[in-house]
Amino acid sequence: MTDALAALADTIFPATDGLGSASELGAVDYVRATLDGPRGRGENRYAAAPFVQPAHAGHGWQWPETPAQGVDHLLTVLGDDDLPARIIELEAGRLGDDMARAAFALVCTLVLEGVLADPRHGGNADGAAWRWIGYAGGTR
Image (cartoon, rainbow, N blue to C red; front, top):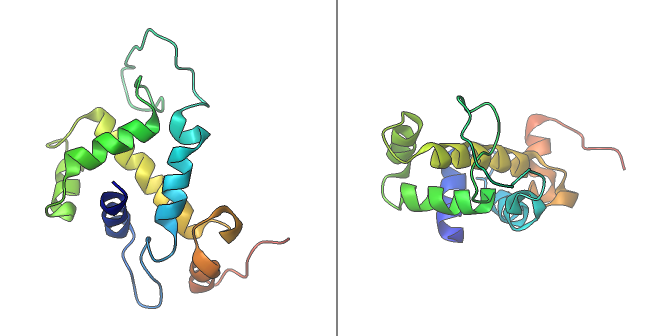
């Protein structure tokens, strides 16, 4: 699934003039490490049954599956062909389900975190994204 995750991350944050793609910046490693950790295992959420789906999506992750399992589900839903078009279909509600859409929102957040994170936490290899936006870096 790492190749599928890298393809998705690079679709979310492609290379641009003067800056590499998400995978080139180490964001995929950041996403995978986050999903393999407590956040991906859902350790920070109340996860006891019953699972009642709220009336709207503003309540955060609301499935018995962990966020990492949701991302695996998303990658299965998106498949390998014509990723940009499939993402448009997903966001329009014509592909996948609510969990896949929530997982996509999570992956978008994690990719951007990985691109812009302090390099000490993974991602943002050598502070490249910080230099690109003109940020001098954090205090140590």
